[in-house]
Amino acid sequence: MIDWDDVRYFLAVARGGSVRGAAARMGVNHATVLRRVAQLEERLGVQMFEKLPAGYRLTAAGEEVLELAEQMEASSHQLEARVFGRDQGVRGLLRVTLTPVIATHLLMPDFAEFARLHPDIEMDILSSGELANLTNREADVAIRVVYDRKTLPLNLHGLKGPELFGGVYMSQDRLTAWRAGAPDPLRWIVISAHDVPNWASEGEVRTAEVPFRVSDAEAQLAVVRQGLGITPLPCFVGDADPLLVRVPGTALHLYGTLWLLTQGEARKTKRVRLFTEFVSRRLATYAPLLAGLSTSRD
Image (cartoon, rainbow, N blue to C red):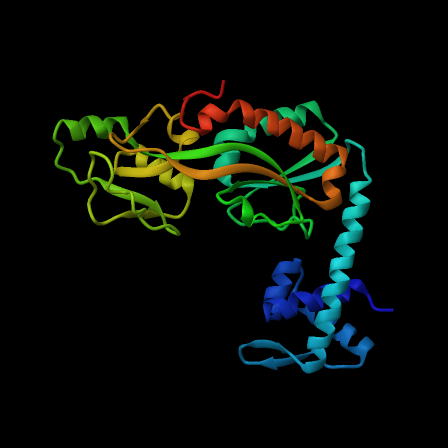
């Protein structure tokens, strides 16, 4: 009988093209990956990889094994999801994925309150820019900003939340200095992965041609507080910060709609239902803040 764990290691190498990458993904050492793949090759009686200078390439036999291995993986995920969906207890692990900004500046107090209400639920908050795969059970609930509903995968169940708007902000002190005629040029502050938006020239305040780039949202917020320039922020971040003000003459821009997403049988568990209903109610109360119509969570 084929060991499913051996198949998992085979898939990791096949998808990443290297033993080193597979080892990092599986959280094991290089030798373990080689041993597991060798065990599967011995069991099947075929060589599945050709080692090249650039990495590992599937042989013709390996290509056939890959197709069947992916079917095994899909069946395994379906089995796990179905069993998980029958669990109606409020004890156990609940994994939630969302962006760091929404976690830190909006929902973390609510997550803490939910944990206090349900002390037997183990919360695992995955605040990252990477999108966790709900189908592969990398998370149980995803809180995402979706601009176009049609882009949501059909296998996901969604609770629609409020619309999220953003504005353009600068520090209050820097605006005062600009109005007083301060000669220092203002920079447009952007996160490295993004370009200066085409609406950056709107408003009364003009920026220098040379932008200032940072790697993450927290650094972006720290820099704009220092008065270096102007930057786009979600309204729930910019409006709630006493050091910041909206840049005069600029309009709000729609980022998208917040959605609470779950998948398949997982959404039927009691702890997932309790959490999504709880957060959905909280998001509804934050609608004015998210739309740029309020500066308070209350």
